[in-house]
Amino acid sequence: LLGYRIVHARDLPWEERPGGNRQPRRVVDVTSAAGLVESLYARTPVTLVANVIIGLLTVTVLWNDVPAAALGVWLAAIVELSSARAVVWLRFRNRTPVAAAAPWGWMSAAGSAASGLVWGAAAIVFFVPGAFVQHVFFAFVLGGMAAGSVASLPTFLPAFYFFITPALAAPVA
Image (cartoon, rainbow, N blue to C red; front, side, top):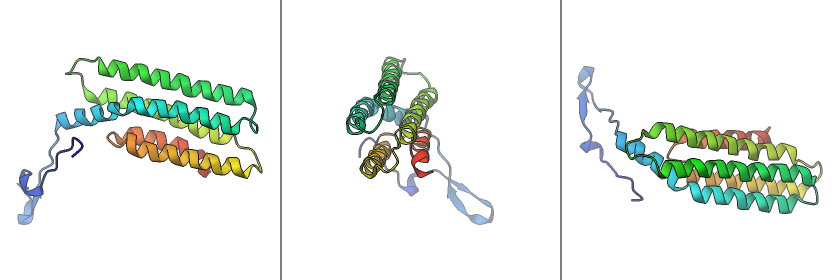
C-alpha cells in the first residue's frame, strides 16, 4: 500500500507493566525513518516544478495590481530557492546508501521553511487594499499550496510544519 507496511497490534512485541497491564513495546525501525525521508525526496521534483509554475501564474494574475519590481524579486526568489532545493535533491540522490537519513530530512525541512517564508511574505507584500478579486485569488493560491504540502511533506512532519506555519501565518494575521 504505497510502500507502507501495515502492522497489526498482535504482531508488536509486548511488555508487562505494573498492575498486570500489557502494552506494545515501542519499536523504532531505522530503515523506516530512512524510507520516510526517501519518500519525502521522491516528491521533491514535482514540488519544485509546482512552486515555479504557481509562482508564474501568481505573477501573471497580479501583474496589473502590484509593482513589477516586487513581482520580479519575489519570482526570482521562488526560482532561486527551487534551484537550491533541486541541488540538495540531486545530492540526496547521489549520496552513499548508508548515509544517515535525519540530516537529509532536516535539510528538506529548512528548504520548506524558506519556501513557506517566501509564500507568506507574498501575502504581505502583494496585499492591495480593496482588490477583492486578488485577495480571493491569493487565498486560493495559499490554500492550494497548503493542500499540496499535505500531499508532499507528510513523511517528515517538521518539513510540513516549517512550510505551513510561515506560509499561512501572514494571511491569517
